[in-house]
Amino acid sequence: QKEVEQDPGPLSVPEGAIVSLNCTYSNSAFQYFMWYRQYSRKGPELLMYTYSSGNKEDGRFTAQVDKSSKYISLFIRDSQPSDSATYLCAMWDTDKLIFGTGTRLQVFP
Amino acid sequence: EAQVTQNPRYLITVTGKKLTVTCSQNMNHEYMSWYRQDPGLGLRQIYYSMNVEVTDKGDVPEGYKVSRKEKRNFPLILESPSPNQTSLYFCASGFSGGYNEQFFGPGTRLTVL
Image (cartoon, rainbow over all chains, first blue to last red; front, side, top):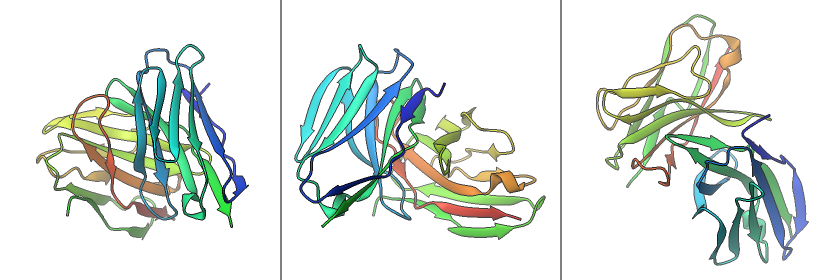
């Protein structure tokens, strides 16, 4: 079993839709949870990070962590074609950053 | 401009021919790391370095070497490349600490024939 599991998609939604991206993990010691966005032919860029359980909101993006279920989510409201990218969850394991496989999102006009 | 640079961006080589991919950052970051990205497998860490002269294995270190002689540079060395090392490679850097953002380079696409 992988330490971090993420549905690879692809996920295709119309502009304006609410998007939900999810990851599950197996190591209960993980405390720092991050979402990176990767556009085609580019390196990943940090979108949001959260510590421990709870919600964090930044504009149209909300990150949610449920440590009891070992489940994290990223919600995108009012999705735009410019949100089309691969979204990777990531978690710090002491000094190593463990990534999910990434979910490819396509938002069509 | 704050950035992580990698060279070369594209490389086609043959089995067994030693190569080095350079990585440099200008943000005075202590932490640097190398990842490979493969379809269906995502980003996997190869090696990381907490600071100068300190390196540690990531999840897929076999067939790779690194060195950290200066804070800004972290080259990735493939002594005898094989076709299964064909991949997209990313270098990243950040401040040390378990929650710090990693800044990624633009990637190096390597093909080993």
